[in-house]
Image 1 (spheres, rainbow, N blue to C red):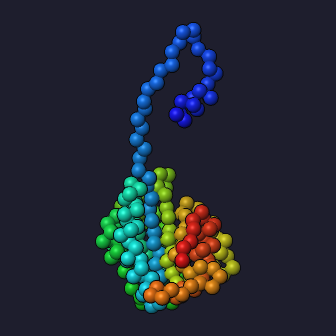
Image 2: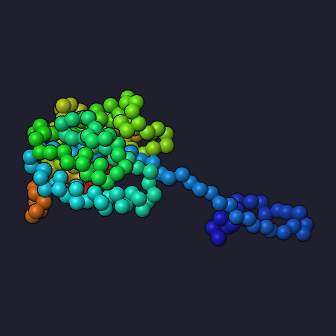
Length: 211
């Protein structure tokens, strides 16, 4: 009833004498929402439990995407590399799980925000369909950081410039990190230091954070 009520309230309510009110149905099909997801996964030795948790959660993640009828692709890089792993941006659960097995021998100076940004810029310049981002005019862009430590910056005192850069990429950041102010310890899931910069970037770009 809302649509007819809006029509009535927005009209003048004037008509010819003896006019009748008619109704008709309109069927409109909206295109599936499109989103490219980039996971930036910490690949250092302390991430054993967290990387396994990502593997365990992958099925539920893909089920949720499919229930929402989302046109999605997922890519994975690490906190020390901007190179997309596996087949680039993928839509298969098995391909994602393979790409997300990033190992534990990464550089212990975790530059997640820096390499996430480099990965986006590299993908903007790529030409291969599986390596490039889709048209930003009709495709959302989400970057998800997963780490048990805070980001290390190569721009000391210039965190705001990262916020500007991610906004210019039209990217919304989310973080799966240790919460402020003290991080967390969970039996069987390891220990996480507070991921202050990841959390701040998520808040500044319209995303959110989880422990």
